[in-house]
Image (cartoon, rainbow, N blue to C red):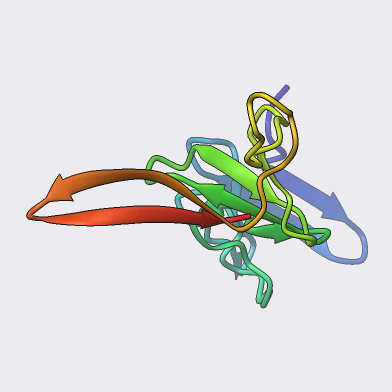
Length: 121
């Protein structure tokens, strides 16, 4: 299957088409199309473009990524957090199984000063 190179009809006459190496249309007669590295059409004047080609929020769910664009976790509108496999990221008492409320101290590390990391549950 190939790309349409030209089209002719009685109303518009002949229209010529050009494509890039990825078979995306770049030109249709005098109309020129441009794409960013994530293949988003730059010719569209959409105000809701997705920066960095990452979905940040959708349908009340927020998505978080690491520096390599891997999904770390997602957070529901009510604050519930889940990892990329769907496992709940809340803190639970290992003996009773009850959810721990308040602040949970996750750990400390020394990098010139001792920093404490907390997560609010």
